[in-house]
Length: 143
Image (cartoon, rainbow, N blue to C red; front, top):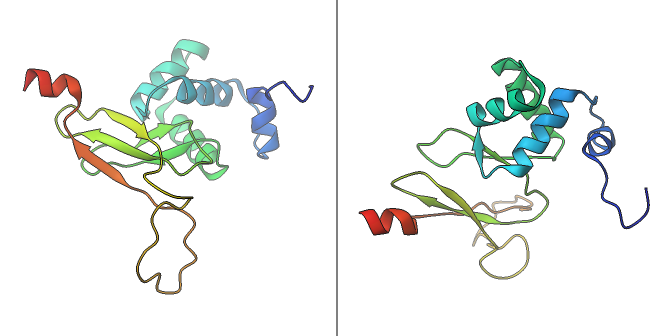
């Protein structure tokens, strides 16, 4: 691999200390090609790529990929967990109150973490999660 090439999905899995399987490769690619997918949507995408996979296997693989920092789990209030491939930065999310669509929004101001608490209570803050709620353009048009 030259310096200009991106690592393959299998190489990323190996680099994170994970065993490379067809299901894990398909799952990571499904998450990265999707848009804040829930577990059912991810399972469907993996099945389209490799055939049968149990929902339990999807949950286990998502847990491993999240722990390895290859995917990010978000949980907007009142919604099922969703997964995204955008990791390693400190972005936030816009969530539609009506249809549940989730979109990325870059850090509001400053360097990561974007928001510093007035009193950190002795914590070493390394991340801030902000969720902006409202109506997406499509729901505003129909609402």
